[in-house]
Image (tube, rainbow, N blue to C red; front, side, top):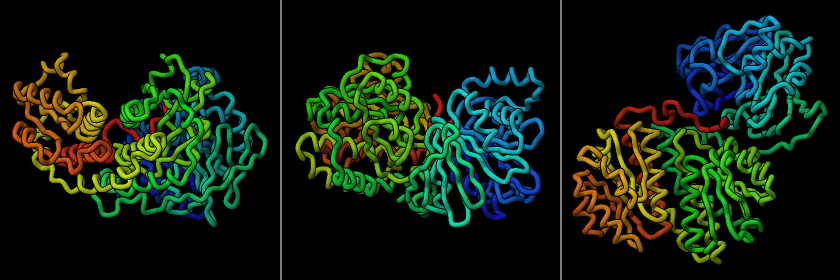
Length: 579
């Protein structure tokens, strides 16, 4: 859950790497560091985020550099635990994303052989292992130590006297960028796009040697060819475009994201494993898990296909009896728990489908078939447009399985998002900003939307928020309702309207402030609520999208009113690549 970036080419290596690390900070931001190779090896690193000014890199001269921005897994965030890490001689520098699961055993063995450790990290063992076998050939030394490492890694290494960068991958994405006069290596494409759109995605076991004018990739010591791809994302996709925060930009991207996701999917042949699925198991984490819950409701109601949704983090340890199609959802395509779940599904001979946003990611290489969200890069840690893109994928699947019954709604659904973006949520923000606890409630497919609303609120504003199926509040949580505990409720026309309205009146009787999302001409909800938010469209697909966008904006504006660091919430990182 860190970001690595390397560059080899011209004399501005350190400054290019520093700027690249800024674009990777959404992957981790508790410390950062750079090692640059010129006549000697220089290292600078620091706890905290990369300052806009004030980090002196004048001493980091050279044509090759590697850098790292960290989300701590081993050892507290401080200058010492920041990457890069050095060997005993100070001649070898390593940065690493992932987890070395057997590092404690390796560290004890190395200490017994006289090695001195300075940090609490698992990464430092890699530098010391390379030190033991290094004889002037860095690629050979890296290849020699990889069999000793258990776990996941994207490694970049430099050695004094060896004018090359060596990159190695196992269960952690590593992308090579090919420029006209330079080469790049990074945890994902975002820091490379400014320089080139020519990319090569390494596969597990690959070791890439980057020289100033060439790249050589081996696997198991044997040369391999990896296909070069031209990435369609643009530089503008990873810039704020005049918005104060990436999260707000990405919320406003959603009308186009939804329409593009549907358009792209209609131009593809649906994999047969979907059409033939008699039952479906979906594994996902976080926001993707909530999207999967929406899909379950729609798939069972409209297509009569039995579906279950499992948290990927639990699936490995408590797998259900498996039969039928298994779908794994991951924006990054690198979510460790979801990868493991799909591996288990394949081991049980289940057909597997990946729904991801990143072409060439690990999950796409594992699954039998893949569908892409086409959301473009998502920089803010709090997922917004990827959730809407996931809904677009699921709604398209339902539409196809129903013979095009939802086509008109899909074609016009972006209008619901556009109108939701125009709403003034100031009264609702005023109701939420001083709360210490907030409940979000809904029924049917709006229940997962409530879960997602609570997640967005807690991760951006740090207000404790919980999502519930509305009827469940009576089974315990009612004890927490008070004038200081707002409830955000979604109440739309349909089968559950009457019982949902009763639930809302029960909450009102407990004195809790009510923020109600409802059909714009619903006078009953207008009268009972403290703040009424009219859904521009309340019918099923448009209503789901309208409510989603309102929840996102409510969380964003509440967090902004509280002065939170919206794009980089404390303790969180974008891609969860460790279990």
